[in-house]
Structure formats: structure tokens, C-alpha cells
Length: 408
Image (cartoon, rainbow, N blue to C red; front, top):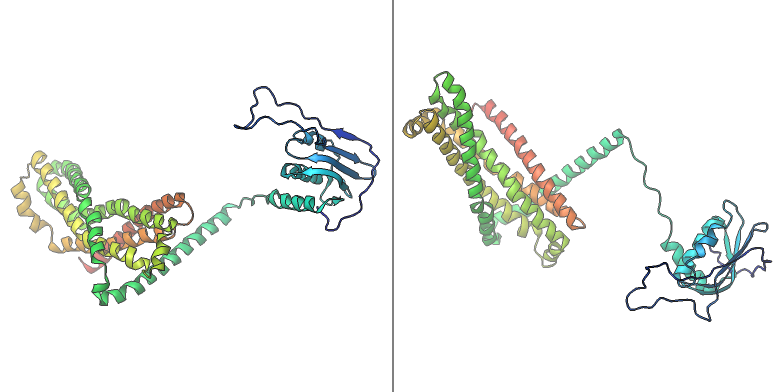
């Protein structure tokens, strides 16, 4: 440690003196570009380190700088360790730079935590104090916790995230409800742009996957029904399953992976680039500019995407039923209104806006929670997709229970 006052230099009879000679670098060593390899100048004094173990006195002299102390660590290794009451005399110290100060800090740590410095000039003390602050040992890493502590921390994080999501929902409602009373304040042009990105551009992938899902369901179910001569019941199988459950759920999962992730990535990137803060500076709330258009657009397009998935899914089942199981297109279409009540169609379409609200809010919520670096954007995007799909499936299960209780 560095004492505050300058004590009188301690004259120590030299017991052991280490002269440190600088030798050329090893073969193959090259100096940095534009600089020649430096040697000790004629006026520089070689650094020396003397110590008296009996009286616990040490003395450093000479020039302790970058080009004169590359070998001083060998001398430091020869100092005794594990003792107390040492004093380091720096009255004979000449030039000192940060490299030499770091070496002196190694000397002090070798001599002990209570080692005191005497005879140092003010500039040397300031440099030693600066190096002490910069080279302080890092605290030991926190000890690992047991499984119970990790479980508690995980539960605490989930509860905190749930409370934050409820807070986000309340802020969105408080910002949105007054705007609905004044439609001219809503950014309709941006809603149209979001509708195109989330709805029209998603038609190919939603239609293709819904068609393939209808093909798979008809093929797997028809194999069993044919064994009992009940091929015609493929209409009930494909119609009820697609219209009530699979089409809206499939469309929601695709939108969660495609659109919900883009919402989180877009808002998260704006958080890092401070564009969200710039919006607040201009007097525009992030909910007005970023969240409300996405929520409204997705709530509009999700029922339409579900209807599109209904049509393509049923058509895929019709193709398989006609080509493999002898149920013609005409028979399929004639039987479909009798086999599938209209209430099942509307129950499937009615779930779509709720799915859209969950997907949009989860994506925007995780986008606003991004902090720090670009890696957080990727993490927020992953969380948004996983949690949106999870919440959509939970909501679908709750809808199924409610419809069953209501007899729909």
C-alpha cells in the first residue's frame, strides 16, 4: 500500500543487489512496424532491487521503465513472501512509467499487504496509485448455487417477466383506448403497410402448409376408415379438424415464427440504436408508432389467414379423398355443410384475433426489453417466438374447454 506522507529515506546497507541487464530479444523477434528495437540509452540507469530480510527493508533504484525492466520479474521472484512489516524505499528511483509502476506493484504484493512505501516523489506516488486502481485484483467469482437456489432464481425471473408483461399490457391499453375515440390520430398508412407484411406476404407459406396438413390428415385417417368401409367419413374428419382446430392454430404458429420474431427484432434493434428514445424526444410514444399498428394489422389479417388455411386444408383433403379413397369432389362438397356445423367454422375464425393479439404483444414486449448488444436482439427474438407459440397453444386449449362447456 502507498502511505500518504513522505517518510525519510531509509539507508539500507546493501545485502543483496540484483542488477538487471537488458539483452536482445529472442531470435525471430521483430519490433512493431515503424519502430526500431530499442536498447538502454547511455544515460539510463539500470534498475536495481535490494532487500534486507533481517530488517525487512527493500530499496528500488534506477530507471524503472518499459525498455529497462523486461527482466525485473526474475528479481521480484527472489523476494521473500509471507512476512509483514516491510518498507520499500523509492528515494533512489529515477524514471518511472506505467510498466515500471506495475512491476513495483508486484514487489509490494510480494512483500505483503501491509508493505509501506517511503521516499517516493509525488509523481511516483500518483502513478503507483493509478496503477493500483487499474490493476486491482478482481473479486472472486460468485460461488455456484445449489439446485434449489437456481430453481428459486428461475421462478423469480418468470414472475418478474409476467409482471412486466402485465405492465406492458396496461400501458398499451392506456395509450390505445383514447386513440380509438379519435380515429384521425391512428396511423392508418402504417397499419396498411403492416397488413401487407404480416398478411399478404404470408399467404404462400400458410396456404402450402395448410394444404399439406390436409393431405396428411386425409391420408392417415383414410387408411383406417377404408378398413371399415367408411371412406365417406373423411369429410367429417378433414372438415371438423381443419375448420375448428388445425387451420387457425397452424396459421397462428406460422405467424408467430414469421411475424412475431420480426416484431421483436425490429423493436430490439431500434432500442439499441436509440431510435425509440428519439421517438419520445419528438413527442411520439412508442406505442403509437410501433405497437398499435402491428396489433391492429395482425388482428385484421389473422382471421383472413385462418380462412385461407381452411380453404387450402380442406382442398388438400379433397384431393387425397378423390384420388385414393373414392370420394369425389362433388360428394365431398355436398356432404361438407351437413358434416360440419357452421358454429365450428365460426369458433375457429373467432379464435384468430385472440391469437393475433397474443403474438403481436409478446413480440413487441420482448423487443422493448432488449438491452445492450446485438446478441440481446437474437435472444429476444427467440424468446418471442417460443413464448408466443406457447401462449397460442395454451389459449387454444382454453378455447376448447370453453367451447365444450358451452356446447359449441
